[in-house]
Image (tube, each protein chain N blue to C red):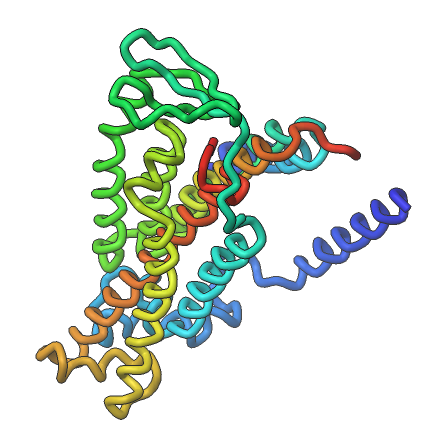
Length: 276
Length: 81
């Protein structure tokens, strides 16, 4: 069975490599993609959407449907992770560990014993893996706001430089994941609870689809941002640029919430109690 | 495009890809997959697709490696097969 699998894989790979010979070579000016599609975007996208970064213009405006359903796929991934892993009932671990912050001593409390009240001197730590490192904690805590600022910059500056909703959303999510890794999961959840992810994730998709539906209501095509000119009090070309920014914000929100949601579910086995 | 650099990165991509599927240690596999994603990111940026390279760097090399490490941490580190 194993040998059969290897033969099938090698045959498929050989077929794919053989088919590559029919592809136009890299940067070939007469390849089908470069005949009339690319010149149209390169020459017209600036005057039609006033977005200097052609990739952003194609991604969020000309090919808006694709990006909308990509966002829906990300949302679906988050929801599936939630339904597969999340354990809704309060399933407390049998042993808890606490650290005395002044002396660094750790104590272990079994289930049968009484759990101590929340005290200033004691902080709860993870049972499995809890090395205490002040340098890592402080460095990551200082790094997080800069990461988030960079994420916002990537989303907002996607019109002019590489970047956009997906990348910016991932960076924003990674900042919260960094907080969860360097401190513990409970700190990160305390900053941003599960309810916030569960709401932000569909809200992001809704902003995208809602912008499209708004254009439809105003009598234009779905996702034709020129329709927003009347609402935003700008000319249709600038309205398309602003429409791209609105949907990028939606994508960023959805991606950020999904990344944190998936991480929280995977790292805590759906218990939201003790993470990585 | 410097072809020596291109060839070196392509070789590393193949080595990282083969290593990621053959290694027994799943944590090592996750890290090799991150290295593979980063090399792909370099290839994209050599070819001038900066947006794709940015996505590959943030999603492929960054967050998905963290997801794999978290999954390995919560399951087992060695494969059965």
